[in-house]
Image (cartoon, rainbow, N blue to C red):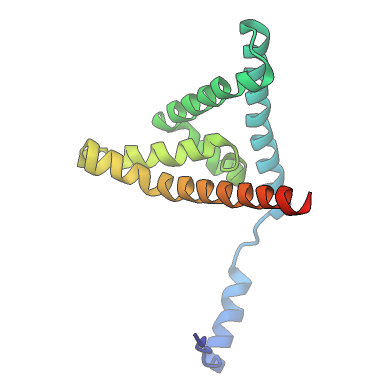
Length: 158
């Protein structure tokens, strides 16, 4: 498939682009990175504290404590999303709240909350899984491909 090339800009369009670039606010990239790092790191550190709580108080090991830890983080993220707090944190932190599992929980629950007036099936269920479906399919497909490569590598290469 051949890509269409854009026609060259006219003098008026180039002049407007220069004019618009002058008044465009500069994004504070370093500050945004610092905020994302601090908030995302804080979420992850809180997750580690929750996991340690399960390990030391309920005799889990690190591997068996991971599932209840994730469940607690998802529950807290959904609760904060329902109260509108998570969105304010996300506006401040940017990508720092999108990376941990809490970002995925926020995306799913906010989509469900937004469409709840359309009913449980057509509103909540359908719109919640518009996001989750592709993520689950991609994760499953990626896991299959990695397992296939690992198996073939062990069979032929290793």
